[in-house]
Length: 207
Image (tube, rainbow, N blue to C red; front, side, top):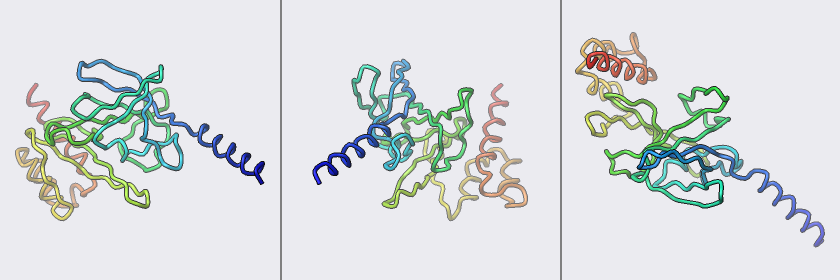
């Protein structure tokens, strides 16, 4: 019986080591220095090689350097977090592949919420969009969109989504009219495209 127990223990240990945290990337610190690292404690609970994005959207992140040293950082202490993933089990949107075949996700802290959490950066411009991930007891991932304009987080409700987005782009009347007219021009799930058009418009004006 003891032999069976020991064999079982060795088997479980082997699985644990074979699935050790392999999530790598780098951070950019407050001095703008780039530090390559492995991220600790952000793995999927069933597969340590897969990312749990909700674990990144926390109040701190822990990294391990090549020499084994570990450091923890709160959002105000870092300019950004960059994580490489090869699989996307939660079907997170907007993940273009880079030249090495990996996908890179960027997370940042926001001064607009006093650096409470790390958020995934989606769009940066006159209107910026970030994602905050949460995970329920069944390990289902939910996404909250965070909109920032004029150094302020804008309230966007699922019940008044079109109107709330419209209130942010009203200073671009042509686009506002197309968006607010309803599904015949832009569906609700095309809000990202609308924000990109908005940002590009004002970028061209500044030029």
